[in-house]
Amino acid sequence: MSLFLVDYENVSASGLSGLEKLTEEDVVYIFYTENADRLTFDAHQRLLESRARVRYYKVESGTKNALDFQLVSFLGYMVHEHGQAAVYHIISKDSGFDSVCHFWEKQNIKVLRVSNLDVEKTCRQDQELTAKLRELLEEKDVQVVMGMIDKYKTKQGLNNALMKQFDNKKTSEIYRVIKPYIANKKA
Image (cartoon, rainbow, N blue to C red; front, side, top):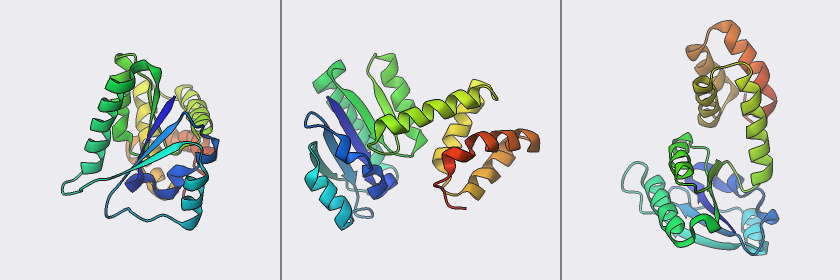
């Protein structure tokens, strides 16, 4: 069984990509706020046709990161309910959730953060990119670059962040490696 906790405020409808690949054993929990409560007709149709069970949680967003805190609290509840019998996925581009994944990894609970429901493709791409970056950088810098890729929505913003962190030569080397993986980002 796989459980998917969607940070809809962060990923919107793009986070639902791969929904059609889920099974009747999978459960999708969509956490949304008043600021992110819209679905396209296409996304609505895919949700209706999905074999997975889908549940919605409207988050009262009175404070910063309210959705993140409630999603993580719910994850803890799900881990209590299902333990190691499930694989847990946080669907978000927010690298802040990585610390949650590491915490549960130490407890022998598998929690992954991915950007959409197409877990196999996303995990495979992340693993490939991480391996390539490890050939070029120290582990701490690999994590910094992966966080930047998640954080910045444009290629220009990402490049500027890399330039602040690394020298020109290193930035060029990194950018050559990551370029195929960021093709979907705006210029």
